[in-house]
Length: 282
Image (tube, rainbow, N blue to C red; front, side):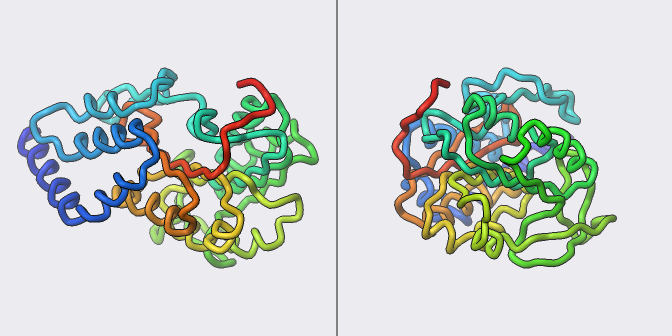
């Protein structure tokens, strides 16, 4: 039965990739380096394989720093990742003037990461976390940064209002089947009046709502070309649709893909137009 399921799954994904062949081919043409192209090839192979271990392809795709244990998958596979999935010093020019917009702040892990990478020399952070329990932990993390961070117990979207929500720790997300209601902020409006400086770096890990939020940020991205690190694994189509969308907002971007685990999760698209110069050592 497992073999039958594997063959069926492989056939399904082969058909899906064939249906989206033009978009996938376009993505390959947009990618800025061989590592990105290799990563994409391995991920596609992992999904469509029928007779080989998909994890073997994902291990080939995984970034070199994926050595930190994260969790054990339902099938018993041990999942490893990296301590720094966002601020890659071979792509970005992060410095003391960095203003981070952290979409999906969780418990403040990205806040601590930026502090560590810059040795505390960053300008400001806007952190958005809708899950109430995670938000309380985020607030405790933020205490160390005093007047250099603003925390919002809300999701980000293309309008102001309320939304149905599933509380699920790191997997908390907007859902029509949610059991709680959260506040959501129109991120486009927010960016028009960011009182502590315009974000120079945007990180989005918002459990599948990335395309909607990118659209809402469209005018800001076109005008300001912020560095971006955006998760592209919550829906398989995100793998090609999000990078293509980012490039369509500004063709000044160099587009990269890195896979930050040995599992099906943690694939990230990076976009930058800046020279890779730093005013600190990493």
